[in-house]
Length: 315
Image 1 (tube, rainbow, N blue to C red):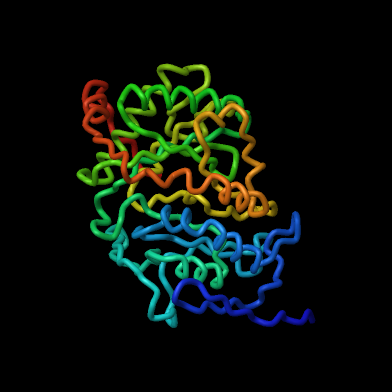
Image 2: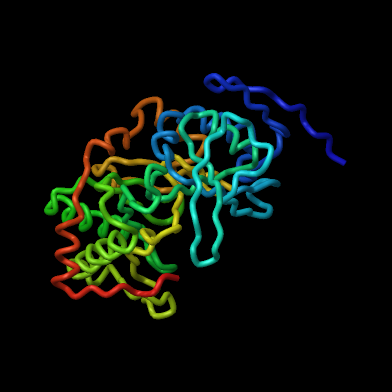
């Protein structure tokens, strides 16, 4: 039987976080460990806290490393430290609720990693009013036979439309094969309106790039060579990996903020827990200004009315 490594204690802000099994390998491609993962998140502390701040957050946990079982955890378990913060969210369809992690400081992130969290998936609303999103998420999701060159082309189309709307888009890699673009919005609408606005935007992208884009709802009906603009990521309780979140794959890729001028050169696999800390030290948090660039959804909702956009079913 393999001997367990001794726990280490880290001072994270005003709190001490105990990391058990620090030498457990989480990412087999390069042998990075649980402690390497903690140190990665500490190295991008301002960025990950900015991405998660005040948001209900679902945790993707890998108790044995990413080669093992993945656990989707919404509820903070009993026995969490008293300094941890949570927010209660409800699930009316099931008549249930959950007290989810609500990050306000870096120690909350370190605690979650101690609990074997690799990925952080926050809501697009904050605890002040969890039913009113303040973030519109554009998910450029490539189908199986869609290459990254096509993702790049569609990202430029999305950027063009955002500029015409007067909206500031904040791009990042997904940590997989796609790109995400976030837009800060006024928290004046519910999830259905935000999703409807996102669908109107997706239709406009499709109109301008019909050879590259699909908005077809059912996956089985989509051309596998195209890119799906996934407006459904704005539905209630749908989450995607945050900026600076590591992804649960052997390479430990990271969903990484990028500059628009990097789109044509970026390769998503370049961003990992081994490479992003140096990038962050050089560039800082490229999404740091997102809260100062707030957009009104009114123009997109006018497009939805103009185009007779109907709400598809949620998956």
